[in-house]
Length: 322
Image (cartoon, rainbow, N blue to C red; front, side, top):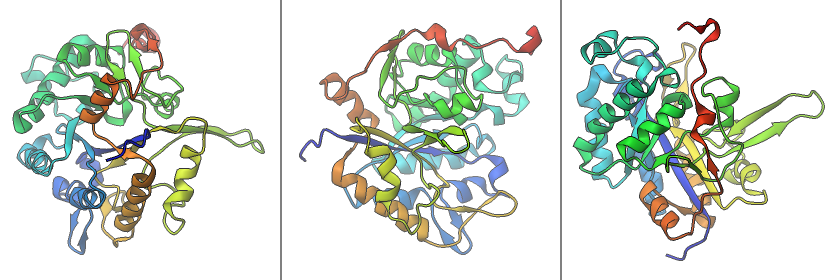
């Protein structure tokens, strides 16, 4: 393979959150199996395999805590298929009894509000769930809904997980984290963890003064019927588009019904994703977290600067009370 010197990671937040399906959450939201068709992680892997690429699956066991055996089967299948399996957590969905059994208070529920001890426990406990199934060391972590703080990154360093996939200006604007750098390039935290931002662009509308950060994710508005090149354009036609991180979810090939539940309608999103992967493969090497670490060690992907972790310290709640 000729090194294109342009790299993209196709990252999939793999989760079965209770609110997104009526029942059978792992089957519906991860495998994408519905009575009238299937569009889930197997179909994503098939699209990537057509260009000899692998996807990076950030797997959450917290939202599927009542179905851990089913979540474990997902991890086993992805690993056996040669995919890149890493850690994702939505601990806000864990039952109160789980925390009490492990010596913690139920609140705060969200990871971006955790202190050092609870953050470290969360990373280690659910990291072990994946490592025990794959037999491979974890290389990367992404917090559910990009909810993280400095103690999250410290916990990664203590756990020996070298990569954080949490930086998002959109999440910062939405109040889901307390800090992010306005960059799409990897950078270094002061404790040695490498931050790998999700690719975003800043959109400002001069006629009404509105602005926002838009993630490079699938599906995107206007994608279907427009071809992948029109979606990729805003992210690739910039001064430095040599490194991209695409965001998907295990349910990204499905649709939402009027109740906010994922449903299968047709194969259009499967085909659209296949087109996007093919288009990316023409100009980019589609890499995994293992590839990233190798390229970084060889100087092919460099970190741009170092950021002091104190910038991402958890902010106390208003009034000084939780």
